[in-house]
Amino acid sequence: MSTVVEVPEATEAAKQLVQLSKEYTQKLKDLKESAYSIPLKGVDVKSNGPRALRVKDVKSYLQYLRPAAEQLARQASQLVQHGAINDTTRLELRLRLAELEHALFSATDAVKAIPG
Image (tube, rainbow, N blue to C red; front, side, top):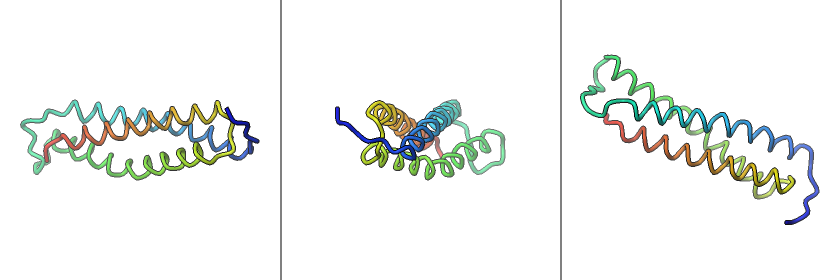
């Protein structure tokens, strides 16, 4: 383990990124579950029925959430690679980043599997 002189601002940023990563990992997991709960057959996405609206809602939520989640992942990655934070904080941030990235890819795959 290397010795790092911590910078308080970097440590505070890491704490905030850990919290945001936890929150948005859960939101993405919930989105994936919403996508999986939509029946794959019998949904006419051109209608305005409840199931079609649900499909549109799930797809648009990912469309709006994805850019910010990707930015969060980039910022966390930068701090992991270059931040003046202690090794324990770096490890926690790396683990949260892995969870976030997995949740983002899983939610994206689940939403893409919805026809329409």
